[in-house]
Length: 157
Length: 147
Image (cartoon, rainbow over all chains, first blue to last red; front, side, top):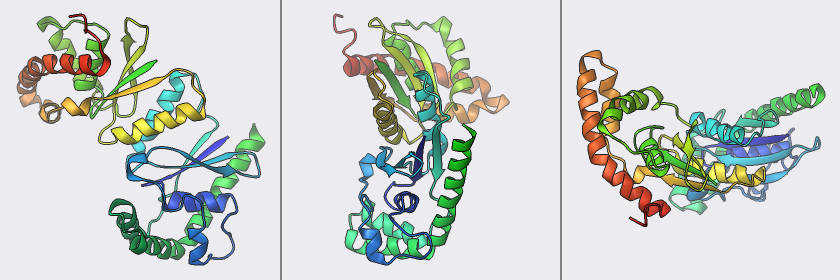
């Protein structure tokens, strides 16, 4: 099974969810700011790479975890991916797309724009981390639901 | 190889280029059916529309990507690698030759009173776009080089 966490740019919320999923970040407390900076690929996705997938790791059930950015076009991008796979007789049953943009702090959005679009990393990155830390529990809850669904799918197959 | 013509709409430029690519000739008699087809399938965003096989047996598709053409190109290329799909993939971005007319046709075509105007605009668009699309396909794919 493959799980794709996707967000706007594939640089912040999706990578945080993937990191929580893979236990790089804790589920029981809010990590310090430096812990986010140490996550591989955090605040790294370039603007012209949006849409590309990045393999982050394999979880305890053997599922591959990826992240990707879709801007705000997931209603178009996801059918395009599934359609392409269908054309090559690859079923979508083992693919799970998870929207990591469930709740986005405005400060994270601002920081993301400063860092990724304007290249002001030193100003933008701390802002993204500040916003993500405020909503950290929401991401933990989301990952918990995804892992529950993952267990259900695995046990039913 | 899969050749995918990407446009804002699934039809109009993307479909026209795909038709030219597979060698379909276009005449005034087929314009009305093409107009109907464009109107019917234009909003199939993200769905691959199989148009046919070209002379090298490449599969030619048209796809509507709205303004996410670059995102879809990256994502399909990534999934090709993840699933180790043997077929090469080539995306051709037809937004380079697109005009605003298809948007206007789509808008006014929904209005029953303006349907004829939409059809007239479509014929105008077709006549203007066909040579441009043919030149574009020639440049992008190297087809018709013997002409």
